[in-house]
Image 1 (cartoon, rainbow, N blue to C red):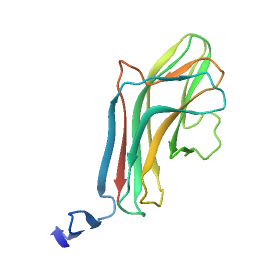
Image 2: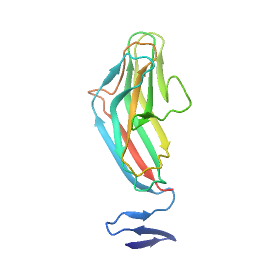
Image 3: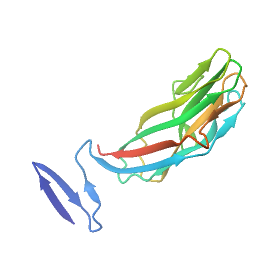
Image 4: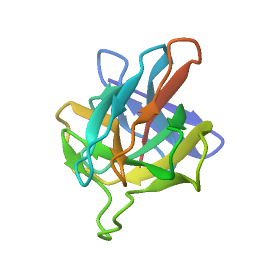
Length: 163
């Protein structure tokens, strides 16, 4: 065990060199999954399906916040449709307001639409167990929608933030 003092802030470490306490707001660790080149498509209405856009992090402290950021290519088919997405932790939807279209969506009124879904979310999991965060996809009208692409990279990051 040791302690590092810098400008009035103290950082305590265990024998493996891991923080045993960190100043509030400090980034403790970052896990990333980048260059994801997998496409997920669905025509399911009212059922979110998992995509390949996922990352796993094991928090060091139960009191930590987890910041998730992602960007992923989305596309809707040639008919009027919504591409909706939501973030899930270990299979549980983190969108808790009851919004039909999840945490975000694209809409087209005929013709295809595509672009990058960009999202972020702060989670308070109160856990030190492994947590898998995954972007899920939904078709609002039953037309085919896609997230991810074999030629356009997607990514997702998980930041553990000390409290």
